[in-house]
Length: 249
Ligand code: PEP
Image (cartoon, rainbow, N blue to C red; front, side, top):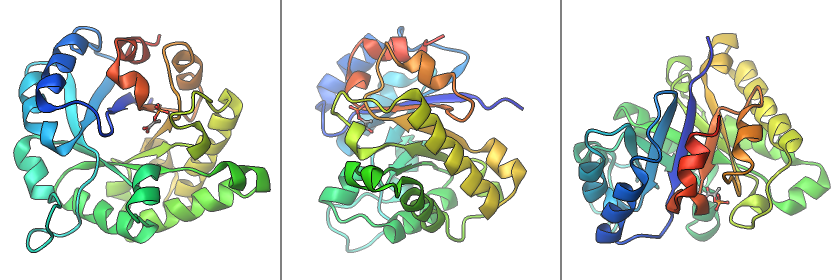
């Protein structure tokens, strides 16, 4: 069965709640699509206004992070139940910026993966190598480790619903996109890793996105690859161009 493409915007730390509503209103007609799942992953404070603004459209709302405890003395954190109650269906976990600036590790990502599934939230788990790792030829070893630890204890049934975003760190926000061949090679390698950890059915069902300077000009070629099931898009998700990426065909 063909996998349905999924294109998610990662707004990062951009858009106040009132700006967010204006952006949704601008993008809504441009990202209308029956063929592709469209997700806006937005800052926590924007979630309520974005969910409201997206009502009646094809857009699903995601968070950019989430904590792995249910509730309690974790000042400043957001729980999975808070997200689902607000209407969130997806959560980005382990983005390289969270790994770099907020001490996120494969193990904390794994705890969050479990919590997301417990609450019926679809995780978009990010992985990706630095330029140094690519130059040293250890890209696939590093990413296999991120995937193996991230999915520790996750069942095949859960894994089939997950999304993995392959985002080479050197391509994020730099305007430097991985070549189609580089992106496909790693996404195929991730699928093979899932096959080894689970089975063929899980490897064929799981969706793997490419992220890293995706734009209106390169989306069609990237998304046409056998193992690339859409994109996680940063900068271009805040512009009209996001409509071109969603409707890349
Ligand atoms: C991202 O934030 O996940 C990302 C891929 O950013 P950009 O598209 O701006 O490179």
